[in-house]
View 1: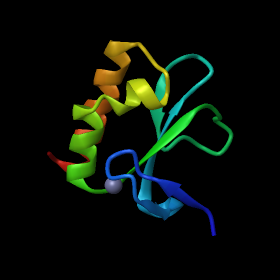
View 2: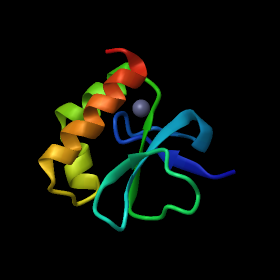
View 3: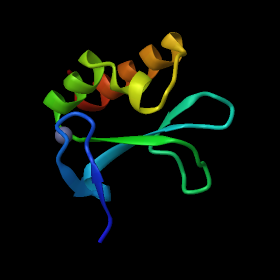
View 4: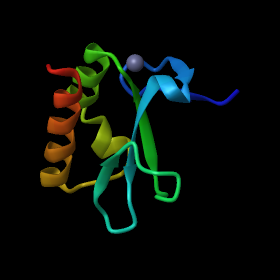
Length: 85
Ligand SMILES: [Zn+2]
């Protein structure tokens, strides 16, 4: 069984328990991309505290080595909507 680490709490979870964020080839970010869309990815569990941590600690920027603040803000807003926080 493949387990992935949540960037919010550093615990390991099964893939289906996590939200995946991928940096695509066109340098945009995508939440839960299809299996054909490949790129450097991070995972966060479906827990509002972990999403808050991910945003507060700027984990998208560091884990994906990504610098487009506008795109990061867009994805962070989408994550917040996912959980209504
Ligand atoms: Zn977590």
